[in-house]
Length: 298
Ligand SMILES: O[C@H]1[C@H](O)[C@@H](O)[C@H](O)[C@@H](O)[C@H]1O
Ligand SMILES: [Fe+2]
Ligand SMILES: [Fe+2]
Image 1: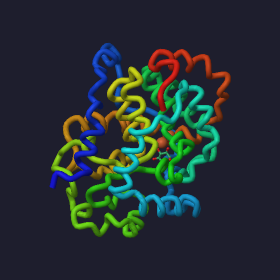
Image 2: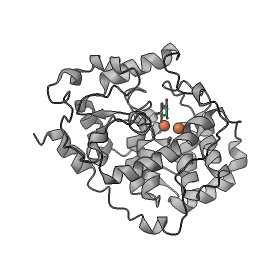
Image 3: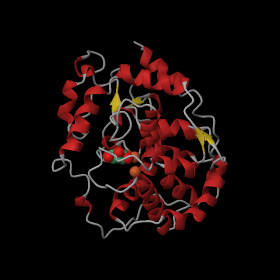
């Protein structure tokens, strides 16, 4: 069945090839291998079994409510509204009021998390486009201030809707309460998708990754890899656990490399020393001006 959902995703993505990133990438040496802080004790992060109730309750609600129907509605809503117009730094400041309920690893403000991520990438001598990707990657959480239903449709790890829920997601048992888990099509291996159709043709659960990707793809000169880092950074079942191979195409193989290179900076910088936003601002304002207009539609 070429379902409504598949059509909606295709239509929604119709402009996603609009940016020609080739020139941006040309001449930039980028080593995909991440050498980020080998000395860190990585077992300290993402310990969901030991996480507090705040985190467990968050995922219980998210896994129950992220249905295909909800995702279509969220995408239509996104397209039919204008939310705000502002620059990147202003967006960072605005986001600062949010405390992410899904995150067991940091209680720092969002602006500090963004700066810690960018600074870790910068310290490793990575290109400016990757530094700026670190700086903006969670700005999609602004959705929470733009009338989301809660945090469950903004933050947390992502997964595919429209086919069988992955047991590689955290707390996989909680998907049992999602009505799609008993839908004969949505609960099948491929669901509404074709083998190796490519991740750009599947619906990831709606949240800050997907939203920011759509905001930035036409309003920045970020290269394709950067947009993949943004779009898939919360897709841990895929980039960490190796799920959803059967939906991937060749482009995704390349994107996976990029997302894997980005992930350690996002995750392990959470234990770094704190950043002073005002001190770092001049450096990052210069980078911002290189990749974004002075104001963007959010
Ligand atoms: O709790 C975190 C947080 O919400 C991050 O921003 C997101 O990217 C991660 O996937 C999630 O585990
Ligand atoms: Fe995130
Ligand atoms: Fe992050």
